Length: 294
Ligand SMILES: [Cu+2]
Image (cartoon, rainbow, N blue to C red; front, side, top):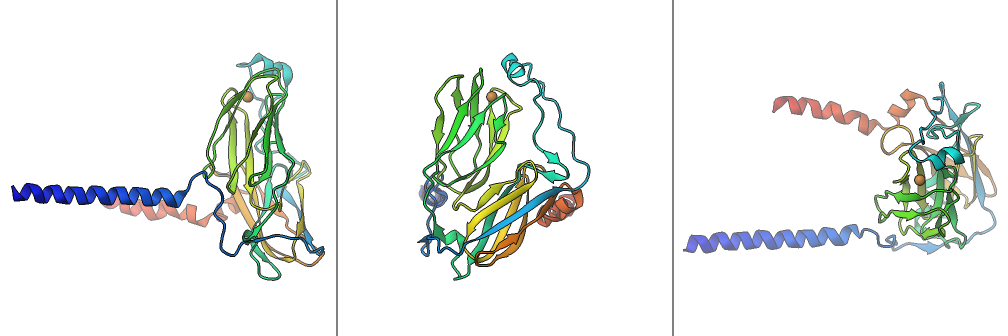
């Protein structure tokens, strides 16, 4: 009899501890809520001595030839865009387009970290169009809480399906002629893959950033980030190839008052890509000997 009570007590204790644990982790993740603001955050104001970071992204080696996409599943796509090709690696004269470049870290000259500033949300929307059964643009950036507008310029139906990690996911059908879809992303996330459930080849990437210091490389591989307060920053360049999360490279730059810093990146070289993620490369080597002992 006593033994049974004892077992019951132990079980109840374990159960209640589990419940407490679950509720704790729920509060910590705060999924979909607003960006947590730090105690030191302050509103950003331009002083008039802002600088610029500009550069070009090169592609080393032989670029892959874009592949023709079989869009026969939806004849409207073939009519609207008979020359649909893959857009994951767009290279022209050795320069790479669609690279997302942004200020990832660093601080202004007075020591204020870039992440501690709060910025006014732009009132204009950033538009992702579906035209010729592909996304235009292929990569785009939007500020936290800025309007993200999706339009359908095609004579067919699309289904927009972003797949975020820190923001809530959604997917929505947009028939031809339907009104634009407007959404916002409350949290920083670089980058969110967007696909179409109607046309499996359709892919784009949306970056959500807390500040306005980002750009996407154009056809000529160049980018310009303006309006940066003088300071020392880590600039990151992200390209979709190279693993499920793409490849990101970083560089330290110093922006002088009213000055222009250069940040040139290079993608495409296999060796350089491997060395940029040493942690990931080491994991199999550490795990294999342990598996052998079992
Ligand atoms: Cu579609």
